[in-house]
Length: 185
Image (spheres, rainbow, N blue to C red):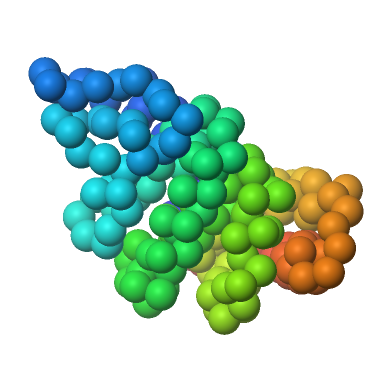
């Protein structure tokens, strides 16, 4: 089932550390995520496309942005997720994109909120599907995602913005507080 942000980050970190660099590839980190090469010259922009192994590619993108802690890298990862959302929202990859959005919200909340300001339709569509895509729980109760969800809502409550970023931040926090786990058998 769906993984929450920090679990996606853990998968991303393991994938990042275990991915071999093929001859001719470079694992150097410039200040931008798009410069990073994982396999034989494959750039991040090449991984930011729908298709096979989307969850693994998203784990690399989000994991690298989390490790690099650069504003450019974070924004690049967030823009990738925003680009993928309309394509994947009704596909099996929707859960991975949603989890990636949550992970980037956790890692780079200011950048995430700023990038979502002009993306109102994508934001609202994502928030409507959030509980099913990222908070689905199939084990016994209680759902362990509730603690993570509440922590993320509290994190957002501590950020002070003005204007549109404030409205977006409040909207996301409101949905996180009102969302509960979606239980399935």
